[in-house]
Image (cartoon, rainbow, N blue to C red; front, side, top):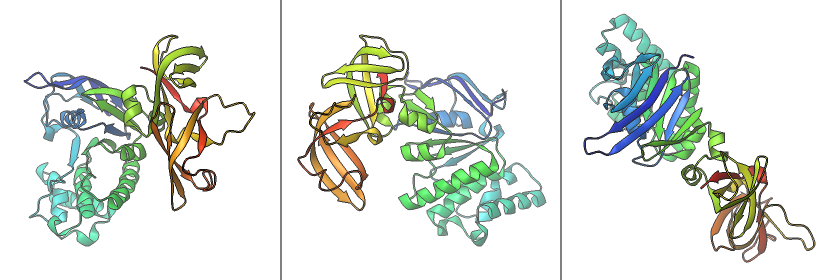
Length: 362
């Protein structure tokens, strides 16, 4: 199978011995939207810069559409890069900024102008095409940077936290436009972000990085619901995690003996009886129930007391304390948690379906 991008055992070690990226393997098909996600210093931007050619590599290979590009300078790689700062030329008009890359490539003026005009129309920049970027809003400058990156028709568009400087509302609007544009053009996007919501809503697959290494590569829903490692479980979403020892394996269901009782979930990866494990439960999977006298408790059931309950619009936000004294935050529509039942100080039972929890090796 031909890939747009292949990273093969890619690594970067600095002169002082610091490892920025290690053993990175990734294959990206044409038209995929890939997000690199992780905390600051995890190696995601360094990896992007190696793909672009702005950073040398220490080991491994980078292939773009089958061609090894390790030693090619940035201007000879079939990529475009968009930075958080946009890097627009303040003395040039929007039209000239967009066409600058084509001008550098030596494209004939008539062809260059035609491509620029098409891109201006695609991104709705007609009204500002003759203005300078320093007089425009952040959202408008972001569209100009996208237009400049796409007009050269790259095989891969590299985006280094391009929405980080925008306010929340504008950021959401540009996210929607970005995904629609990517689908329409069919260009492969590699997108660096530290914002979980951005990666989960935009990408086809997410690469979670930690300390220069890949923790997990998955589709967003799989990553959110079935973390492979303890780091991913703690980094993605709002999960409650219990530690214990594998007590019993029944097909895909695994029982874990913890200090607050036996808990059941679905194994993700190899687990063995007697080994240390973690039970990971997403906040959305947790229910609070009023205990009924004489009724058998659910398979997963933990005593809980509401310590804080307040309503924001139609949403009920709760804080409940468990027998191990940890506090778990929950929220749901007020129809699920009505005022009269879910009030401060109420003793309830925290529960979840076994299929909604994930058991991973500790």
